[in-house]
Amino acid sequence: MADLDQLKRKYQPVLDALNEQSAVIEAVDLQGEKLHIKAVCVSQASVNRVWNAIKAVDPAFADLAHEITFHQGDQKYTVKAGDNLGKIAQYFYGAASQHTKIMEANSITDPDKIRVGQELTIPE
Image (cartoon, rainbow, N blue to C red; front, side, top):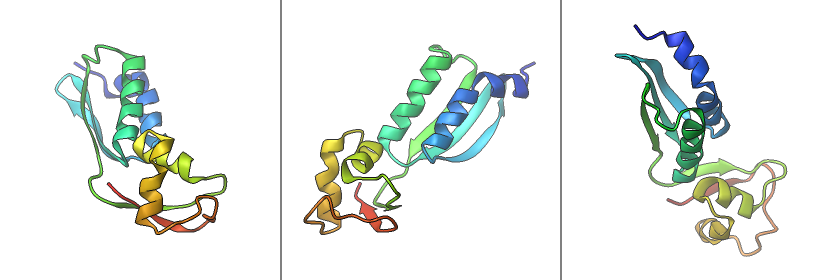
């Protein structure tokens, strides 16, 4: 019989990665003999980072049942201290060079003119 607490400890780095990626964790439970994790990340790039965490824990992940998806459609993001458009694009798209998508969606003409607290639309 699978031990939920033992599997949670094994996959704690994955749960930590989900938290770091601001994922919405919908379920962490047993599904048969496997740990079941269901979560929605903010982007495909975030899903990829979670996958890296899964593979680092156990490349075969034979004792893990997962449903790791990402939010479809435009999203909102509030600029934090230390952010720039390249960093935000890296987070959502996996490439800083995609910052122009964010600029266009928000009618930003100067990428250096974003400010803390500003809400940005992050296009799909």
